[in-house]
Length: 199
Image 1 (cartoon, rainbow, N blue to C red):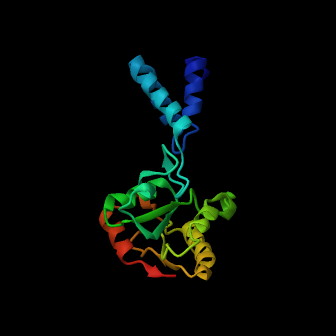
Image 2: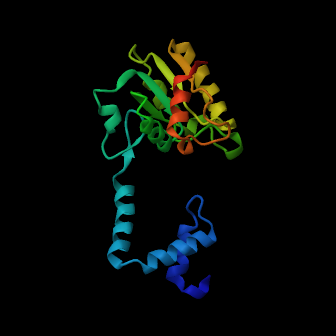
Image 3: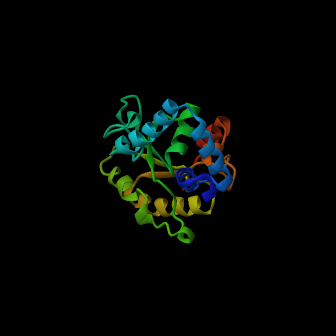
């Protein structure tokens, strides 16, 4: 790809490092960006830099946030007795779209996957356990993806949390096995939430 010149080649190389972006997609995106009006390209570049510099983890649920505590954790309207554990912020957003759940969340930022080298220590599990001190939390709903990694994570969390006297439930599998929660429709997510069962 050196025939495009160093700058475009470097842009293509950087874009191809993004998940789900192969060489052809990276090339297509690079040409699109190059052909953008300069102001739009600057807005794109600045929004990436601003997000990288200003977004942090919520100190409570580990969601991405502009401030120390995210709007969901900060809301007095949320039911503080229930925490839904999800793998990443997109899963939380999918559940929020259903408007069926009024509790709090905890974002793990992944799932246990020995094949990929992801161990429990690399997830936000310690932060979840710290939230369970005291009597406020009555139920943990484990809403990890219904695949091998999600199931392994659910079982691991259940074994850690049950001895603390907190009810642990798992979302019902209205969510298709092997699927990703972020791509499931709101009706299926609502049914999965309603049909949760103790673990």
